[in-house]
Length: 266
Image 1 (cartoon, rainbow, N blue to C red):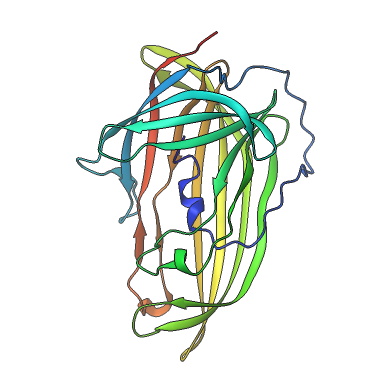
Image 2: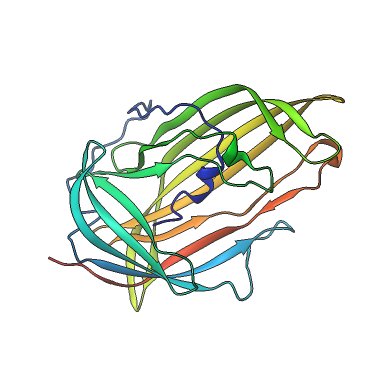
């Protein structure tokens, strides 16, 4: 769960719009337990980091790990009835927490939108857009907006030959319900619904060479199964390329986590 929308922490975003707006006609899903969150329920995942430097996504050697997610508490959190999920790892990574709120057909996650280091640029010291509830899965919508905003008046600490560079960044993040497929959990084949979050933003840099445009796209996939919950998450690796190769391409690794075992408390 922790990496459900991992790449979203790289977004340079000033505001969030959560709305139910889709022009598609969708038959409402029946009320079902798509994500059981009874205290004590546990899911274990096999994880691996991934990379793509040649046009093909592949697992990174010796990057495998295991993660266990356990529902520790039911509580009110930031205005919603929620559960606290604690994630533990076997690779020395510190434990982390996830807050989930759900309805019969929707799943929300409380997320931080403070950018990370991002290729050594130190954006976390420049931008901090706080934390908020984000709709990550909706069985009654074909698609919905998450972010759509433009940030101006910032200076990015880019490496040579640019140095400190004025920038305008336009970001658009959307989520969508995709197809239904089957995945294997242990020895059991289960039906899963795929949800895709696409993070597309464009940085317009004002440099001594004129305006330079840098497009960036990140894709995250989540697979949910009725009465089980999250069966698989995948953050696809990506590469950010700069005009005329004035800065070396930045390769950002992805990861995937696949459910191995689970125990649902009734």
